[in-house]
Amino acid sequence: MGIPPGARPQRPEDYRISLLVNDVVAITEELGWAAFDLVGHDRGGAAAWWTAHSHPGRVRTLPVASTPHPGALTTTLRTYQDQRKRSHYMIDWRETPTTEERLLAHDAQELRDLYAGKIPQDSAEA
Image (cartoon, rainbow, N blue to C red):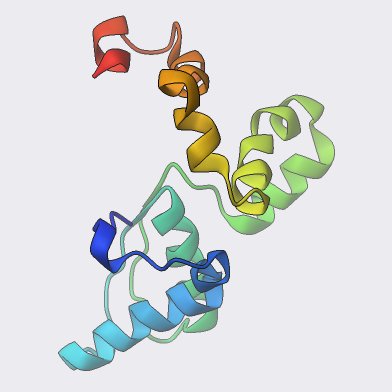
């Protein structure tokens, strides 16, 4: 959902999924598209799933990368402790308004720790 800094909503409630779905639909209406193909990735994938659910007659195709179907994710989080643990960051980031400040504090130490061993060190430093 790459939102430029000057256009980012300031309040967490402005990122509600219903508002994101409304944005997708508003854009397609402005373009005059009665039906459309929608692609989603990561957080945009969640918005894509919910857009297709809310407007099934308008979304023709829906490839989504890095974001499971909401029903499958819910079932998995209820069933598998390991996945629940690995997905906890989503709850933490959503419910903690100071996540960005925390990740960047102390020369971004927490962010560096998240990437440690997962990506090349020079990429983490960049």
